[in-house]
Amino acid sequence: RKEVEQDPGPFNVPEGATVAFNCTYSNSASQSFFWYRQDCRKEPKLLMSVYSSGNEDGRFTAQLNRASQYISLLIRDSKLSDSATYLCVVNILAGQNFVFGPGTRLSVLP
Amino acid sequence: EAQVTQNPRYLITVTGKKLTVTCSQNMNHEYMSWYRQDPGLGLRQIYYSMNVEVTDKGDVPEGYKVSRKEKRNFPLILESPSPNQTSLYFCASSPQAHQPQHFGDGTRLSIL
Image 1 (cartoon, each protein chain N blue to C red):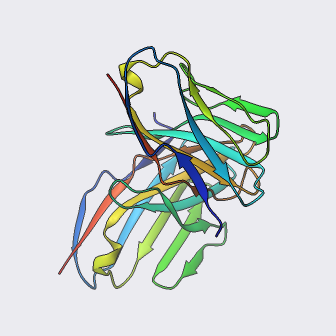
Image 2 (spheres, rainbow over the protein chains, first blue to last red):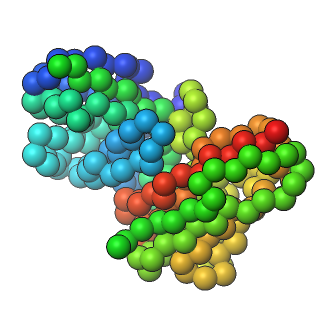
């Protein structure tokens, strides 16, 4: 089983739609969690950190479920500019290394 | 401007010819890291560094070396590059190990 798994995608949604991505991780010792977005051939950019209590940033909401070892990202009112690949990232504090999920590609269509 | 700078951005070279990809950050970050990204495999960590003179292997360290003599610089060294090291490479840094990372623009390496 891979350390970090994501919905395979791609997700093709119309503008204004709500879309949710899921990510599961296998190491229960994982400490920090993030969502990044990556545009084609560009560097990954931090979208948001994921906190235990859940957190929201505008149209984006992230949730963490430690018991089930999954993280989710909800995007409301999708914009064309949201089209990108979304990467789930897990940091295992003890090992100090970061593990990236394979990414889920989102295309928001006019 | 806060940034992570990688050089070169693009390089085509031949098998066995030693090369170095430089990475420099101007944010006084303690943690730095190198990744490679390949189609279907996503981003995989090569090496990381918690601070000056402290480096450790990531998930795919074979064929690579790093050094961290100064806080701002974290070069990636390919002593004898091979075609399977053709990839897109990213350097990243963060204030501390558990904090989100800031990425450089990437270096596209082609080893013929």
